[in-house]
Amino acid sequence: MKTSTALRRITCLAMLALLLLTVTGCSTESIVVLDPKGPIAGGQRDLMFISTVLTSIVIVPVLIMTAIIVWRYRDRKGRKAKYTPDWEHSTKLEVIWWGIPIVIIAILGVITIKSTYDLEPSQPLESDRKPLTIQVTSLDWKWLFQYPEQGIATVNVVHFPEDTPIRFEITADSPMNSFWIPQLGGQIYAMSGMAMTLYLQADEVGDYWGSGANFTGKDFAKMNFDVKSTTQEEFEQWVNEIKALSPELTLDGYKQLAEPAASEVQTFSAFPEGLFEMTVTKYGASHNHGLSWKDMQKIKLQE
Image (cartoon, rainbow, N blue to C red):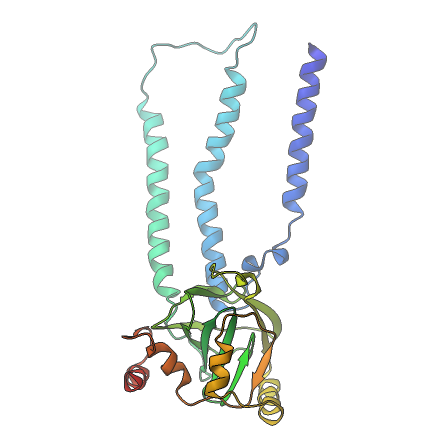
């Protein structure tokens, strides 16, 4: 009997040690949302950490107490735990197990409200640099990026300079999807007939990845795109190379591109004027989130 009990204890300890080794072996670098490379993703990471710590104040003691109670009051010979069948109330304990969660919920509420406003997707980022506008269109099963100021377009690849606010204008010419670059910020939906605004920024040069985070059919798993943050000089060189070496995207070419199919990386030296606005309004009345009055008027003229 003693051997069996000892074996169970050793097994439990071994499993606990294995679990601890597994958890501690996971670095934040392997979890992209915990390795932010921009101010928005950094704020979201901090919010996750703060929320986890605050909720752990309740969860961890409850789990520990559950284990202690199960062990202490288990059915066994010679049990010495005090038996009080008539006990039913303790004001002190009631205050503790109701008061602490209420305080934590209140703190979480304040933090959530503040973070909701601070991390509003359409809110411009503070910077000395002019924001770069990139128009994003979700297609089946690919992403089209248009650079209205540079006059180029790409498929499944997006470049931008470091330390520069990026103003993504996002829509869909396909079923609803979700635009996501995990190391730069949270996802935002791409919807037909709507133009959503998302401000992101990369604080350093690097290669990241983006994806569609919403199920959209057969090849939705292939809706990944390459993200590259470069110096300003490298970005301008990349734009010039596309202008010099890539073909133009015509309206017929866009219609063919919009057909349901996965795609490799493509680049275009030009695209039809007003293509993004045409896509937003092709399904009827258009709506927007975070677009300026000038942009709204531009879209309305396309209707």
